[in-house]
Image (tube, rainbow, N blue to C red; front, top):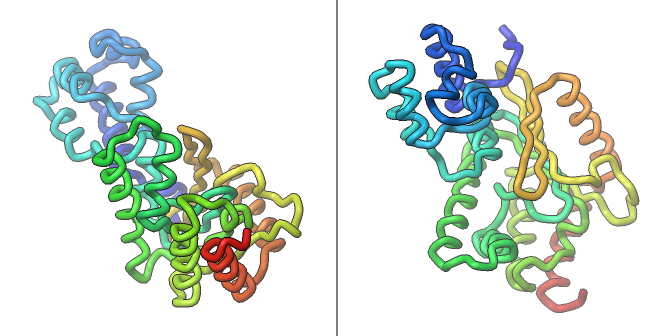
Length: 273
């Protein structure tokens, strides 16, 4: 039977349990916030699964609700490598049967080569150390493991600007673009490029990822600088799918897209841009 919503993530299950235990204890969000020493809004974020409490917050929750360390122990299993706004999306990626992604300026993270990812992180983290970059690159490229199995089916729609922006230098770009083309030709990726000649299109304002599931409602994710928003409101998800379909209708065919990606790789490598 079709469910009304997307799968619950471990964070959301944590938040739902927190809400149930709080209500069972006869506490309002305001009352719990006074004991934990935080705002009621933060309690709301925890209960919705949008954020996780810090370890010291979890200890105070345990004390307030008398849960014998339950929420502090569970928190240890939920703390992951991703920013709070992307953690839920990373979990949902592993559950999705279909992922449709659009990128305006950069190769989507799940498709990035290690050298491309390193160049991206280096660009906006000026005070980084080599160890920090190594850790970030491993975290990002590990996401690509979802592409090793039969599911999900991945559609990738790229603005031509992604092919032209020389991230990391000619060799890095050539390697990255060849990887994308190879994946498309091997059947691991459905690839389309929106050429400059298409002009204005329905997705020109930023990154969009659509995720579909076998037994749950679809979801959408949009991202901007240092923030992201997971969307499961049915009307907004439907509008996102419509925008994706409109942009896709302006794109090149897969065969033409692969040819353009390979040509761009050679142009980067031989300095013809």
